[in-house]
Amino acid sequence: MNFDLPILAPSILAADKAQLGAQVQAMLDGGAQWIHCDIMDGHFVPNISFGPNVVASIARISDEAFMDVHLMIAPVDPYIEAFAKAGADIITAHVEAGPHIHRTLQSIRANGVKAGIALNPGTPASAIADLLDSTDLVCVMTVNPGFGGQSYIALEDKVEELRTMIGDRPIHIEIDGGVTAKTAPALVRAGADVLVAGSAVFKGGSVSNPSPYGININAIRAAVG
Image 1 (cartoon, helix red, strand yellow):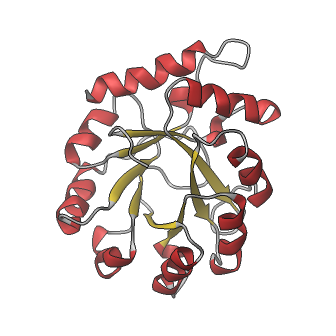
Image 2 (cartoon, helix red, strand yellow; image 1 turned 45 degrees about the vertical axis):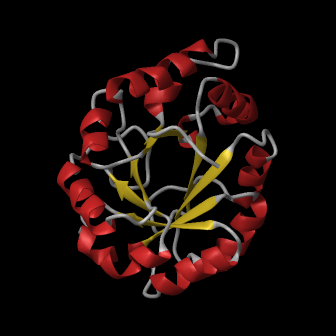
Image 3 (cartoon, rainbow, N blue to C red; image 1 turned 180 degrees about the vertical axis):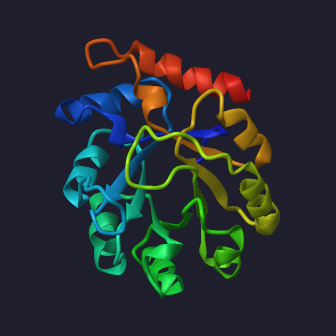
């Protein structure tokens, strides 16, 4: 699939879970290109979200939905197949989640989906220098993972360093945490091309009043225009 850059990926962590399907469809109707699913285990991060069954339910909503599955869990490897079968188009694992991240990336690709690698705010870009040839996406956490709605941590220099390291490889740089119309422009200038947004795109909208979703998405796009 080809997508307009930067790609907007609403995080369903910020959605009303009682109306999840309708809210995802409203996001797609409002211009979202990817749907970002934050999977948390209460172990690797201090929160619990949902599992493969919810991802599968979202994936069935629309063929338009590119499923961006972010595993904030440890261990990762035992769950890769389940999320791949659930409909993930890309699965991202944290470099901090286990000692054999290269094996994890190989396993993700072996299950027929693209492979991403995530970095916590305190983890340097150099930690993944030897993994780039096994990676389709680098996710830079600009909050400490575990909860939505946190304050943004400015890491534009880290994004610039990663873009230089990546060179001409076809690898996305995704930003996850605190993305708004205010923070997005500097991140895109630094080299990011996928923006995960939760509160900033869901605010003010509902299933009965979905128009704010498109307005919020377009506001971020206009800011980086």
